[in-house]
Length: 348
Image 1 (cartoon, rainbow, N blue to C red):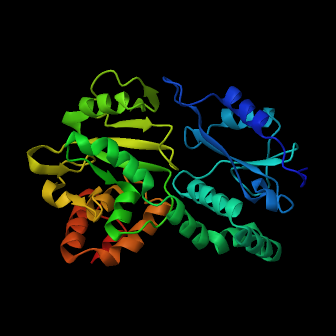
Image 2 (spheres, rainbow, N blue to C red):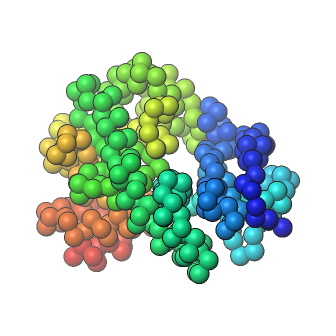
Image 3 (cartoon, rainbow, N blue to C red):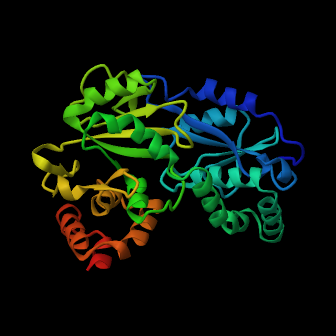
C-alpha cells in the first residue's frame, strides 16, 4: 500500500531501474531507459500530503515489452487497477510510463516547475485536488504552467541551437511543434525535444561543428544509437544531439533531408515537394523554421498511423492560420499520400 508522508529518497529506485532495465543511451541497445525523472504533485514539498511522488519513465521500445513489465514486477512494482502504465511501489511512490505521443511528460515537468516556484499556484492546486482529484487539478493549472514555461523558458532552447548552427550558413530550419510556434509567434506548449531539418549533403559539416562544441552525437539506426562515424545513407536520416547546457529539452533531433535543386522534398514520399524559398521561413527574431503546411504534413501520421494527440491539437490550432495556398498544398499532399485522411474534410 502506498503511504503519504515525507517524500522518500528516490535515488535508489532510479538507480535500480537503470541497472535492471539498462539505458537505451548505450550505443547498440534497442531497449532500456530513455529518460527518467521525478514528478507529480507528491514531489513538490508543499504538496507531499496530497499524493505520493512519481517517477516518470520513458522506456524503449514503445510499447514496452512483457519482459520489461516482468522486471518492474520483480522490483516490487504493482500495476494499479484500471491503469495500463501506472505502477505503485510499497516504498511510497508511483511509476508512470507516459504516452510518448501525448506530450504529457513535458506538460508535467512544466507544471512541477510552476508548483515548486509559486506558492499561490500550489495552494490553488491543493484546493482543486482536494475537491475534484488529480486530473482536475492538473487541468486547472495547465494554462498557468504553460504561461510560466513561456516566461521562464520560451524560445531560449531554440536560440541556443541557433547560436551553434547559424554560423554554418546552411538552409537549416526548425521543424515539428516548434516550427508551428515560430509561425504563430508564441509558444503553445512545452516540448520534449527540438526537431531540426538539415541538408543531408552537409551532415558531416554539422556533425563536426556540434562535436567541436561539446555535443554528444548519436546516429539513429535500427532502433538503437550508434557512433556517427560515417555519413548516414538513406533510408537512415536521423541523429540525436545532447548538450549539458541545452535548456529544458531532452535533445536536438537532427533530420537529414534532401534540399538540393532549391526544393524541399517530403522524406516519406519524394513526389511531394515545396520550393525551398517557400519551405524555409524565418521568424521576426531570426529563427528559421519549416513552413507550417510542411510541418503539419509530417504530423499527419505515417504508415497508416493516425495523428498523435498533440499532433491533432497542433493541426486544430494551426488550420485557421493557414493561407488558402497552404491549405490547398497540404490537402493535395494528403490526397497523394493518405487519400482517406480525416484532415481532408477540415481542409476543404
